[in-house]
Image (cartoon, rainbow, N blue to C red; front, side, top):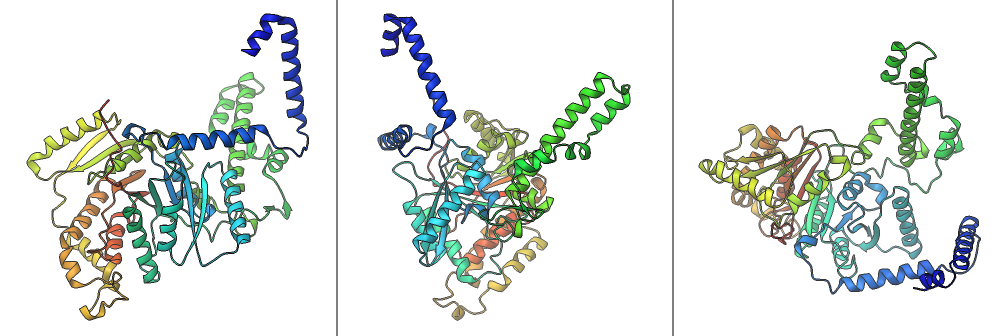
Length: 495
């Protein structure tokens, strides 16, 4: 109103005043003087964030506004880059993303501040908008419990826990295995959804990638990426000449405009490609600042790259509220997964209900407005698994079998498998072994496999038997994520 009145009273003076103010603002912004007073913008940002967070407490939750808010058990963010990149693909800066770090034993405040500064520096450098939370605990189970209780503010808190698959469960200390298993229970007891990600090359690169606080040394000098690109802009153009450029030169006379334009385009493309390669190589360095191999870099950045044109297979085994279906659908809307088609696998109780189940599932997905390429109903999941598959499973649990019932003492409870447990879980074990056969038959060449996580019932299933189920499902498969919702509906077709 004041601005409008200014122009109504005297538009010439108002215009001059307006231009002078803009010029002064641009001049101060350009000079950026070193002053000792705070910014009013920063103060306003804090007030706005505080007010919005408090107002969120009065907003009623609705299924149409549900979004996965992830707490990712990354440790230090730089330790498991693929896990964090995958989480970033889900949240994509429009949902809460928090990194949880559990440390054993008490730590000094100096160490805690240093780890927090290093974590936020890593997140900023890799352009990931996330929070970092460090807690202490005597074990992963205790630290995770503290994280689940403390992370978040009001309604701005996680609803899903994402963690990596424990690939060394057969070799690690058995109490450590039990703590991992109990961590899943802690999340479910607090009504979190759970997602476990497994990739063939593993997620932990803490022993490979150097701490980014260490200066990057290239050829004995502390060199920045921008300087490297500026000093050697033409080297990649010579080495990365494409076949398209060579063909253009062959079909046109030397010195023609077509050849010159093709050379310029090829040189620019090669320079951009070299800059991108250098930026990735500069973000991740080995011990002593050495360059990592191409294979290692590809494994680390597997979820940053555009995925091959294949399928994202969803094995929707149980109704967990829809989280198993929502997460892969969100992924297919991202640019990295845009070329992948969504296939949904469901189970049928009887063979004569196959067509009806397929039509019912297709109708349900259409009501959810989920774009899918195919719906496949599996009728024979309860069929007895092959003998070779059962033998492979028996080898997994061989070292964890209790020879006698007396061997399962209070200390060994939950980390040894009794004959009674194997007998009681025989049908479920056969189900998971049979599911592996179906996975190998249908999803071996997929870009991503999403499956409903089996329920880890603490009172009836021991940690090694449960991990053997997960190992059976995910071993030698493409990137695999097991998801279990908390039975809260996250999908609806009601307007």
